[in-house]
Image (cartoon, rainbow, N blue to C red; front, side):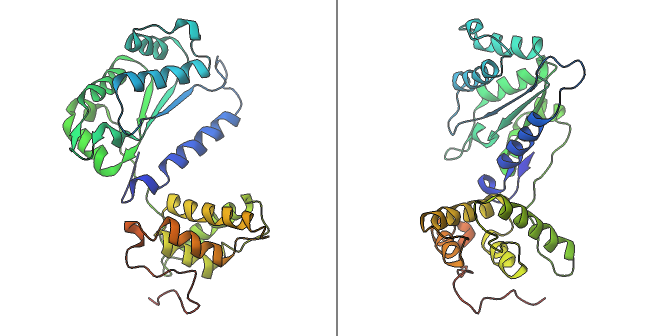
Length: 264
């Protein structure tokens, strides 16, 4: 799975976390020995073989797949044994774009070899999650990995097209669900005029929409406001989006009263 244009903010990590939370609430499958047969790790910005393996081992110990006393210095062997002998059905590796040094545009081939080894030598299904350009670069550099990838799935942003009313409805439904989870009275985020302002600010990307609303919510809580006000959203836009490529040449949609959705 990979994001599209704005890698860190398309919402892929949030999607994975939501999926894992849902799976944790599901009842045990017949014959399952583990209440949660999934492991998920995120690669740090400059991952190494040791740091990645240690992170994976810590998760395995935390979920009681292996006892902490069993961790030895042979990390690779321990990971292989963990995935082969315990009921780990699925391993999710997030932030796979960190397999590439962005400044040097070099792939960490040692860590890539580890990923290839885990996929080839265990029966555990592995999902790689990362930014589209980097995932494609990794697959081009690894024919062995490419042959083992079943499919690539993009997580696109929401769209807004009046000629396709379902696109507007989907984004508004997302905002309505988000609004209900916030510790305020209904802030009207899903009303179409407000929804379009949020869409314009975030280009429909879940991560950017979430970041914008979360920062505005923090300001509203500090001000003891019963709702998230447009003033809070305007300040959040300036602090979270204005200085990013996403905010380039955009007006603040929460300030000018004359801001309107462009006609088709």
